[in-house]
Amino acid sequence: MRTPLRRSSTSTQINMTPMIDVTFLLIIFFLLSSHLAQQETQLELELPTAASGRQATDDDRPRLSVNVRADGSVMLGSTATTPQDMSGRLRIERQRLGDDMEVRIRADRAVPYGAVEPVLLSCADAGIWNVTFAVFKKVEGQDSRVESQSR
Image 1: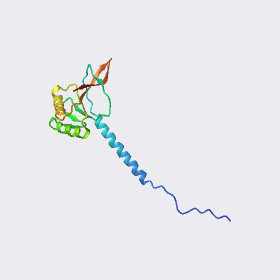
Image 2: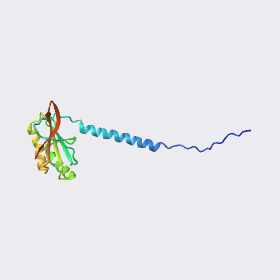
Image 3: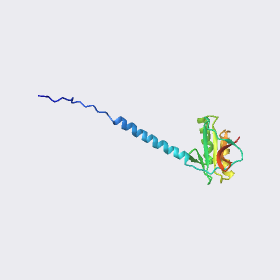
Image 4: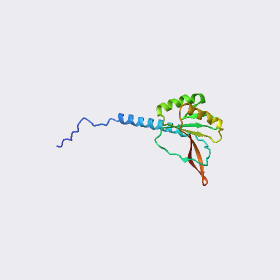
């Protein structure tokens, strides 16, 4: 008579808890990073056109963007600011990023110069002299991004 094969009573199981934890952490990371990326890019401005300038380069120089909306409101990076607070915040950013930092002003084409002037004065007050303006250059029926520099 044949005896049945005995199987061991211990079973091997894989603990799935660490893998589930890591998966949830990755999901949270990607959700937060996509939200922050949306905040940076959601501000669409109609930039002015320029007859001259140089092509925007993405070098490794630290850069801070200042957006001036059509209604005259100013955004330093992705947060709203007032002209009174701008100098102090630019000083802090200059200390954090270094003296070689660049401020790129993105102003809507409908904004009068009077709304951009406080930004320039704040940059000068904070000791930042590397200031550029983001504009469009008309090239054969299509717009291409060109950066005009003001010193």
